[in-house]
Length: 240
Image (cartoon, rainbow, N blue to C red; front, side, top):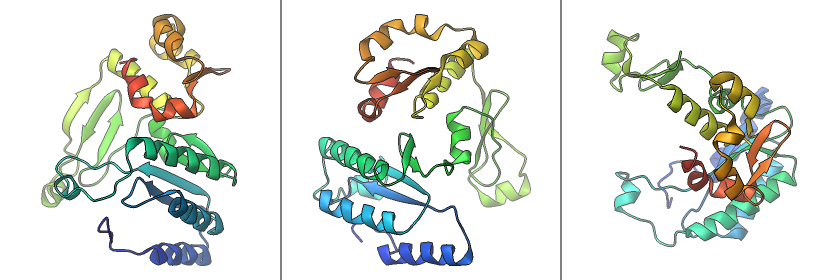
């Protein structure tokens, strides 16, 4: 009620149980942290519900109030601050990792074999089609979107708006930004093959600055640590 959601927690559990009864064996739920009056006890309560639901995937999101939204003009009382949100994130990560879910992206956890193929396509910076009102697509180095008006889309569903061909520099930046979202990190050989860039040489100063506590070297390249994930926007801005 505090965040104006129409459904209740019980509705979520009922929906999951019904989906399982029908036969779905790949179910994901979302967990928002940083809500008004939220604390570790309430988060642990929710996490235990998730644990007992016998689901396969969890997406976690820190509350972000967007400019222009209702809550931007009516800020809720008793919102956790940034430090508290970071503590919640670490707590959620540890709980899920200890209960069969592996974090494979900054905000996503899955049981073995249930990582989201749909979202991994984005984070691997691959092509995808946009179908439907307000949809977005990415094909042949070009990003585009469709109209937000239903009648306009029905009259011309193939019309693409705001088509933007990415430069090689923009493609490289997206490859790095999206790749670092994954816990597997970036593959420096793939970057060399795509862009003829020696990643370690080009970004040596940034790697030296953050390597250890925030960035770790892997067999294939580099990845963010858990601490690095919490500061990802700051760190990744330096690669752009």
